Length: 559
Image 1 (cartoon, rainbow, N blue to C red):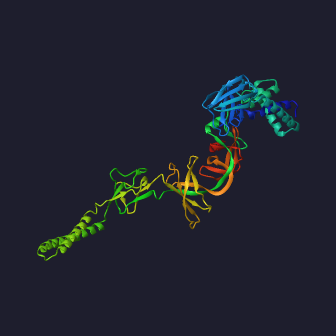
Image 2: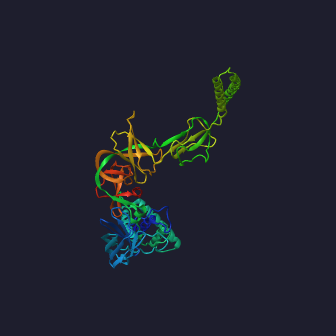
C-alpha cells in the first residue's frame, strides 16, 4: 500500500466514526424519558421521642417540616428557633410549614444546625447536619447548528479510532482499504473540479464534507441536575416520600405494642330486622289498591302502629258476580215470603190463633234475610283497610294507585331501625363469646350483643344471632357483613387498625414501617382477626416499630 495513503485513510475513517453520533439540537425524537439525574434538594433530618423534623434547603431559604414522632401528625402551633451559621433565627409558620431565610445555604459544605422546638408544654432540642454539595461545573454554550458532543468524549473516541485504524492498516484489511480508496477517489474528483493542488488536504476536506453537512465545532455540554423532591419507590422496594408528599397523602403512624388478646373468629352475616319490632302489611283478599287520606307513605317514612297505610277494594270476577246476583234473587224471594208470613201472624195473633212466640220468630227470620241481602249489596263497597302492625319506618313499599294486589301480597315492610339483628353463620365449632363486633366502614367497630344460637344443620353450619347495640349505626337491612367474635383462647400479638394491613403486589399481606423521616419500608406480616376495627399482627412487625395506619394504600401505589 502507498505510504501517503495511510494518513488520508486515517483522517477519512476518523471523520466517519463521528457520523452516527450526529443529532440535531432543538428537535425531539418522540417521547423523551425523564432525566436520569434527578436528585433531591439538600436536606437535614432530626428526630427525638417527641418530634420529627426535616429541613430542606432551596432558593436561599430553609423549609422546615415538623411532625409528631409517634403519629406523624403535623405540628402547626410550635415555636422553632434555629441556630444557624449566621446566628439564631426564629422560623415563620404558614399552612403547617415553617420557613426561615438562609443565605448561608448557598455555600457548599456541612452546616450544623440546632433546633429548639416549643409546642405547648413540650420542649425539645434537635440537631441536624445540612450538607450542601459543590456546584456543578458550568457548561460552555454550544456553537454552530451541527452536532454538539463532549470534547473529552471526542478526544477519547478519536484516540480509540486512531488505534483501530492503525491496526486495520497494518493488517491491510480489504474492506477497510476499499472504503478508504472510495473516499480517496471522491476526494480526487472534487479536487479536480475545484482545481486545488494540495491533494491530501482536499481528500480530507471532501471526506469531512461528505460525513458532516453542518458545522464541525465540538462543545462540551453537561446537563445540570434537576433538583426536586419526588415521591418514588426505591430499587430495594422501599418508598421515598418527602414530607410535602406525606402531607398530601395524610399519612399517620402508630407505634407497635405487643399485648395479649383473645383469639377471634370471623363469620359471614346478614343484617335482619328484630322480629319483635318489624312486620309486614299484606292483603287478605285480592283487589284494587287506593291511597288513604294523605296518600301512600314513602320509603323511609315513619309510621305508627294502627295507622292506615292503604285501602284495598275487592274486585269480583264474572262468575262471582253471577253467584252474587243469584243469591240476591233467592234472598229477595225469602224476604217476600217472610214479610207475608209476619203480616199473617200479626193478624192472627190478636185472635189467639198464633202465639206471640211464633210471631217473634217470624220477625227474627225476616230481619236475618234482610241483613244477608244488605251484605250482598255492600260486597263491592266493603274495602279492606291495611294498617301498620308496629311502629317504625317503611323499609320497602309496593303500593301504586289503582294497581291490583293479589291475596297475601306484601304491600309494606315496616322496620324499627334502632332494633336490628345480625344473623351469622359459624362453621368452626368454636364457642362464641358474648361480645362481638362488625366494621362500620370508617375504621371503627360496631358492638354486638349475643342473642342466641341454633343447632348445626345438615351443612354443619350453626346460625348465631347478635343484636346491634349501637342505635346510631349505619348498617342497613339486608347488608352483608363480617362478624368478628372473640373466643376464650388467648393469643399474643400487635393490635393495628385494619387499614394498616394491605395486599402487596404478590398477594401477601404487608404493612409499611416508617423507618426514617422520609422512607417507608414494606414488610410482609401474618395476621389474625381481632375485632371489627382492628387486626392482630402475630409476625412481621417488632414492638416499637412505627406502622402506617392511615394512607397505606395510597403509599403502596407509588412507583
